[in-house]
Amino acid sequence: MAKIYSYLVFSLLAFALVRSVQASTQQACKDSKITLLGVKEITEEVKQKLLDLHNYYRELVASGKGFGQPKAENMIELKWDDYAAQKASSMVSQCELQLSDVRNENNQPMGLNFRLQMSIDKEDVNKTFNDWVGRMVEKWYSESAKYNYDSKYNSGTGRYAQLVWANTTTVGCGYSYFQERKYKNVGFLACYYEPPSVMWQKPYIKGDVDCQAHGLVRSSNEKYKHLCVKNGN
Image 1: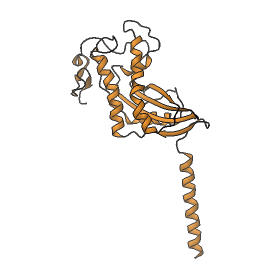
Image 2 (image 1 turned 30 degrees about the vertical axis):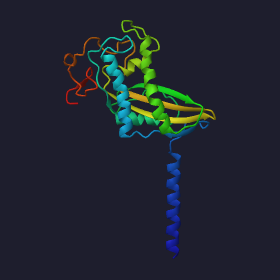
Image 3 (image 1 turned 180 degrees about the horizontal axis):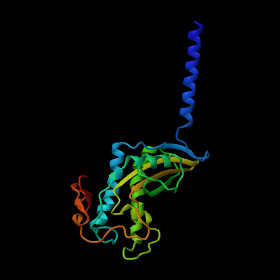
Image 4 (image 1 turned 90 degrees about the horizontal axis):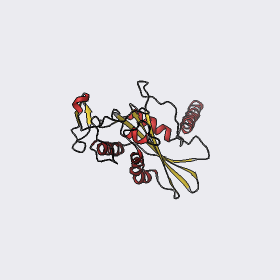
């Protein structure tokens, strides 16, 4: 009986230790004064929503229907990157922008876009994502209004440049919702891109779509008639 009792006590202690370790590794904001309200689960539906938003603006620009921007010969249709999404979700779960050199699985650098959205009322992470994510990506695109394709220097347009960087092939995003103080609730969207945009270089080659000239093929997606994909994708 004593052996059974000892084994039971040991098992309970072990279980408590495991739960303690699990609790210590749960997602939480780096700043203890900020409360993490939720991190968006990246489901297949969420992946598609974020991809659609990105490729919508890439198609818009490539077709010449953007804010006074020229058409693109070589704009690639983005695909989803689970590794980049995991990195982005990890960052936003800490409620803090980290501009450190984040790299992909092959130790190559990735590009970053981010956006914060504020609200007075405390909401649910899923509701704020659904309500805000379209506007957040649109804000990156809106920088195109002050982008001059023929100028080497374009201040304050880096997020637009990354959004439409022709040679970028993949994107992965994360979204969190946290409370900084009683009436300041924040949605935080971050996306990593591969390969990244390059400062002071043009985001794409202007002209009518010509995928073949760049070793690419036209996208088979009817929504993206001006986008390209790599052979075999």
